[in-house]
Length: 127
Image: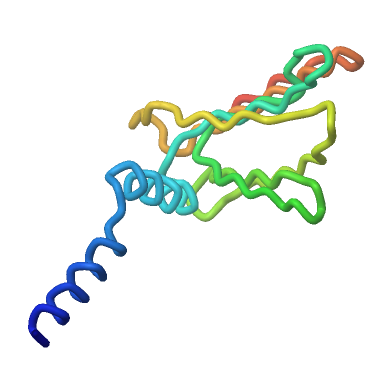
């Protein structure tokens, strides 16, 4: 009887500790992104007009700080070189983070585009 209870306890523990493939992959990608191994595109947009305010592409880590109501974007732009951007979040702005296909030709590719209509658009591309 003790062996059956022990076996059931072990089985219950194993089943509780199981993660789906999706959960494992998601955690692996998050970890890789935090180590700047995942190329991403981040778009910050105006929800009222639908226009893009900011777009960044590169090996970027994204953190949200809900207490400060902001988004922190850190991109690796060279060996031990990083750029950090902070964005205030409001009711009329949102952001999209998209994982891009990895391209080996330049592991430090970094591109930023500002597109507010009230100022002259700035297109900065460092390769």
